[in-house]
Length: 411
Ligand SMILES: *Cc1c(COP(=O)(O)O)cnc(C)c1O
Image (cartoon, rainbow, N blue to C red; front, side, top):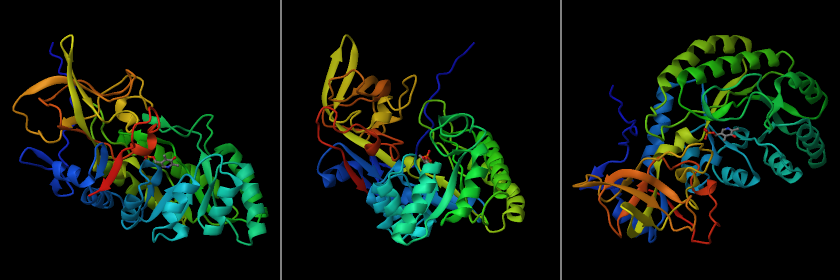
């Protein structure tokens, strides 16, 4: 019996010239000089653009694409994404301010997330963005605040569906959840919305995140559309917005394969006639964070020390879990697995060796690569962690151990 060790899916979005990774058309070493310090996150503008194009080519043209900003709220990225997609989804007042600084129409910005405060609701209502209601309390508050401000709030109901998005890295719908309103309680809420001074816009149904199985996503989308069609019968007005979530994943770990977007697009095309017939006013929206930006970004840190401990080589860098918690394996992973990691200025190695890449924090959790094979490297070389455009800098405990924060650059 032969067992082959699973390997990382080959990543060749960033070209290599003279042994050096190219980001935004320039050598990583030069970009590092321009940024002026390490560590930093670098995002490639052209890759962001081509990712959206790839989706547009594979999804039916009727589907609108929204960028879910929490994946990466860097203002320059949000501006760029705003020029490519049809709307933005925000999950806090901070993200809302960044979204409102883009040319996106407030009608195409929606605000989801449990526990919206009165002041967040008031800002959203004044801005004229769509509030995805996650509870009856939010519904009653929105109506009251709208009356006192003199603006009618635009609301959609976020539904906690009565099914799960199977094989998701993170489940955010189905069963008991803090997100949205349980599907069985939605009809009662829709009746109440009709009595309140609220403008009913539609539904938001989001099942989960980081899914690489097209079949699971297709099944969830079919169930989502059926649920929306069922709930629409109880709605106080026509459904004009139907946000069916997303959850499209990207391959991070050995053995994982990219998601088959063409299959998902084909299945949506087959569903569309039914939706158009039953919900003729509904704009269908897919909201994506990770899938849009995750592969366009890398995390870059510099080797500060090279140590050998009882035969094992450690490359100690100036970056670590305080900037990139997910790559250290401490952001929702059960068994730690390596992200794709390479030596950015030695992409075609003359000699390979097995090393562990660690950060400067005084904790054994601060590991960026555990016994991985990569180019023989030394102090001063640049370590690159791929698949780092989403849930990197802002999803990490940057204050832990009081090292400087990571820089960011959109190249
Ligand atoms: C987090 C989140 C997203 C983005 O999820 P990705 O997996 O990054 O695509 C979209 N919608 C909602 C409501 C979210 O909470």
